[in-house]
Length: 376
Image 1: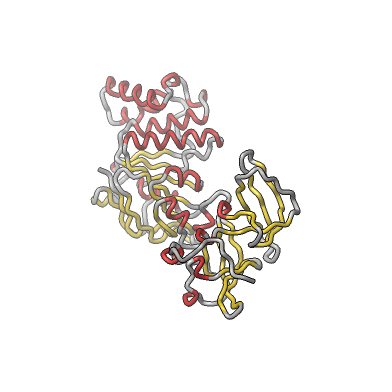
Image 2: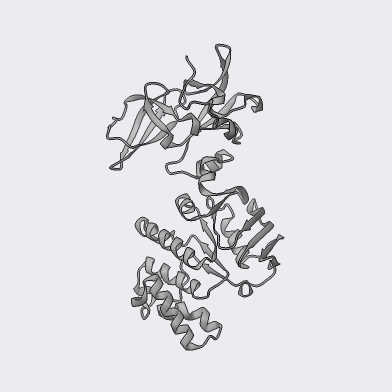
């Protein structure tokens, strides 16, 4: 069993840098991801868990035992770093075996465990080589092997795939997930890559400026972000965020986006909860499609990806770019004028300050028909 709990952790470096009041409950066997941009506090949080950073206040618990003041060697955790942190003068075999030798384990047991781990990771033929003689992906496997061979209670991983090329990152993501499921070890994983977060994490904590913005399962956060920052950080291409306005037409309140209007209830919006008329309208690229009505826009750039394309548009009134992922063979030309219809049942409305206003219970009501606009 390995449950981690962070209770109101604070580490203040000054000038707004650090972490401020982070509280997390990480379950036994969970693959838990800390996600956010550079400088958001995710690595500081990870280092605090490892004992490599002392905290100014707050408490850290492992299986209900407080370990806030424990040195790293007494926390029974293994860390995998971004730069691999291998000993260049040692062979792969000795790098993997190093933590076991520090524990003074019998030589025969060390050799057996190293051979077993190397076989699992597919690096048996590299055991007598040195790190400088192998590729980046192979060095990452060695770093993983050195962590796994210890059989710790917790794995801590600080952007371990960021130095790999795109194809190898995809392969290693699958490998990491498979290994974590095989061993069932509680894992805390730091990344700025939302694709890694969504594909690897059982749950994701989104951090920004040293504070926890949102915590939940990946698709829950993707579909129900609590603010503009979270909505914009998850998604590739990123969510379209357009200026909108609450106004009155024909005696009824409507939301207008770049000349396209619809009833507030179609996106689950309670107008009485809005302070002021300015809004932000968020729609994912996959939830826009070319239609006979909707938001008037001009094609700016078309990126052909083979079976799909990413198309950049400029809305006629707001001047903002809209990106759409197309799954059709129909090709569009730069400069072409079209209309884009958002799937209103999956669209989001935020306040001018960036907080989510959409009521999901209302939006999922059978009374709402996605895509029906208000007559002009």
